Image (cartoon, rainbow, N blue to C red; front, side):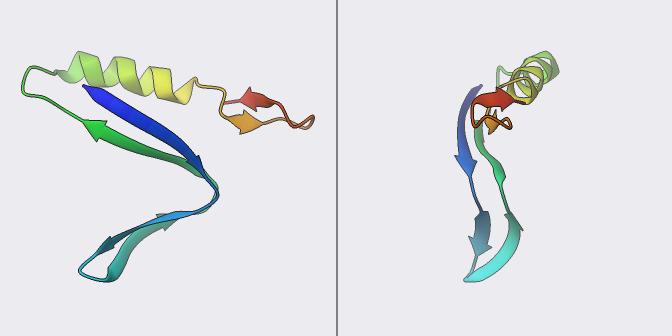
Amino acid sequence: MRTLIQRVTRASVTVDNKIVGGIERGLVVLLGVGGQDGAGDADRLAEKITSLRNFNDEAGKLNHS
């Protein structure tokens, strides 16, 4: 299981020139799953992603998950 995480101010997903989803400030997570990956791998990765300190606090430091 591989993942790439990017902070964005806004993002959207387009299919056949039609926007099918979008977010404002947040995270875009690109996830690659292989046949050998299981539910335990997904759980560990979800926990890791949600605990990352990727958002600014009041002082402007990356200190919020």
